[in-house]
Length: 79
Image (cartoon, rainbow, N blue to C red; front, side, top):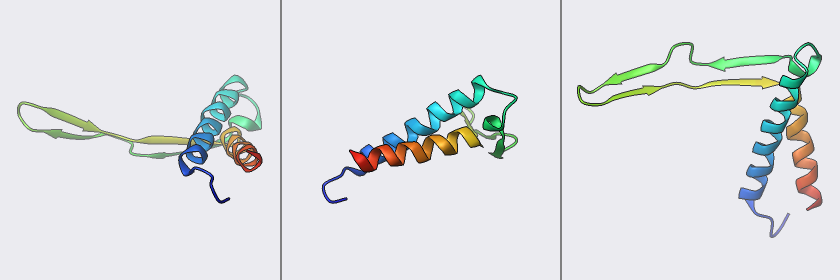
């Protein structure tokens, strides 16, 4: 893997997650959309008087996104 860019690997994995999630949403009643959601149930709010910041993160990992990650890694290895 000498000479390969880590940012390219990260972008390939990220695109695999996005495309896999999109494919999973196209087939909502199949095993592809089965997954787990984790994160914050309610956002954290920081009120500074003038500014109000709201922090929250919610991630849904599905079978389709995992398959997308695997395909992205395989494609990256052949680049």
